[in-house]
Length: 111
Length: 114
Image 1 (tube, rainbow over the protein chains, first blue to last red):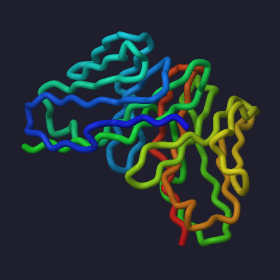
Image 2 (image 1 turned 90 degrees about the vertical axis):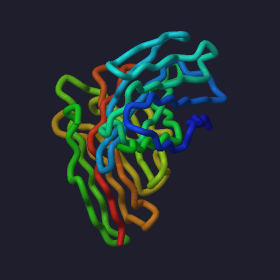
Image 3 (image 1 turned 60 degrees about the horizontal axis):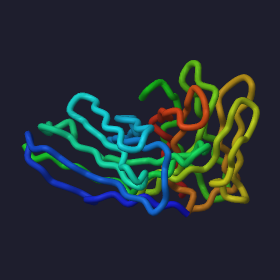
């Protein structure tokens, strides 16, 4: 089946630093989504990307849909303590409805 | 969490019992999706329903699991004769339309099997 690999698996950064994480796939996706999940809660949608090459921002978050449609990255600028959590990418294939989730990147912020 | 309501939040069952998980989608959403998450893993798709219809159940185990989304009331994920391996967090998501419309998730039901 389709697999999405996220890297890094986890990262420990200083407050105020910029963060970058990416998601790669062996298959093409027509839509990429980025979610954040806090402990004990469900994933919260951060950014949705619909076109190859698209660059979209949401506050301090910026995400891009790779030209090959097989990858996406998420940047967080000037990290703050509440950015702690697990970030998941998810892809949707053409005409499909189910999300294929990545393996997750756990972000920890040092004060 | 984005208006999708799941209950109960935590459910404990003994092996062999039945588990019923409920999901009320966001207002105006008629498409519901169920996912399962094991510890330290991402979510795995189980089933996609639209009012009174199962559209895609390719992720559902062949036995003991069923889902419904009746005309009135919440969507129900039912697990019969639960086993230890069913222990997981079960998340429901909803969207206004199908296709690539963003799915918004509830806070999940954590199922523990004794």
